[in-house]
Image 1 (tube, helix red, strand yellow):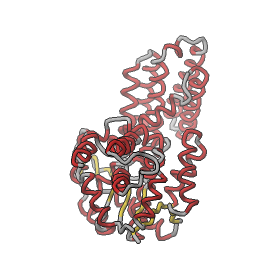
Image 2 (cartoon, one colour; image 1 turned 45 degrees about the vertical axis):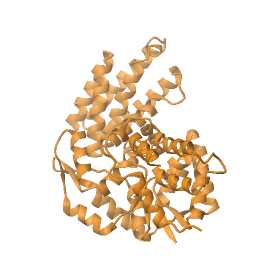
Image 3 (cartoon, chains in turn blue, yellow; image 1 turned 30 degrees about the vertical axis):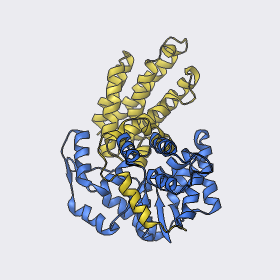
Length: 224
Length: 185
């Protein structure tokens, strides 16, 4: 069975758009396990449950966990150690004026650690930084330089250490999961199965924070 | 670092006392940029205070209110105390004063403002999105300003942050991988 590890951003994007039912159908249809680390559960359920504005969203995710199709991987010493190691390496790759830039939080590090420990098939992550850093570090370094207006150096040894630790990492966003769900008719109980639905879903994810651009969505829709 | 914090606090105090929106906004942005680079939560907090102050004085219904004069005095007093603690290297007291000041800004907004979300919480999300745009991860940016990840994600979605770079791997290619991976019934 395939295992897909989600970080907080991707789960929030899906639940904010009331797409948890579609995600549930996809997990059954694709015979895959959808998993979050305990730290992500805290970020998307426990903490928002105490904030009125985000309570409903947290309840949606909580229900998915209670139903069992969204699994929570409880903290273990091994996960904690791996997570700390990943956080430490990742936060010592890019330097400005000789000082490391702490780019990644324990939450993202924990999702990466779980991906590694489970030898999962896919990491689902909607936020941009972790994805860009892993997939295209040189481009990411240039972006940091542009943003800070100063030279940013890159420790290639540290990056190789991260690469060796994580291996080839496959990343998708909620947008690809939903596009896949659409192709398999998993929206049919709620929406018409036409291209307008796909367009609306992709833009809704974008407007709720999924790191995807207008041009990406438009060229995908054009390709049909 | 103390000297830098003192200079920033003095700048914020003087620009607030002369209602200088532009300088306050600029100081807020400089502080969050530096905070993002150094993971300095105090600088992040100073950034939020400067941003919230700039928002407060930009609203005519605030500064024309009868309650404003007293609120303004209290804010200036608190800024002075923060600077004084820093100058005397009383760092714990400085941190407590910053917390008191942020509470004060929340209470000024809740008594004079029209919105449910107060200016200080808006400042958290606004400046967290700036930190994210600079390159911090979403959770790291949220953590730096103590904002909620959900709030930040939704704010980021309303900006042009994700429009600025060409995609490295297209939706089609990422989806193709899923197609190959999933074994459907």
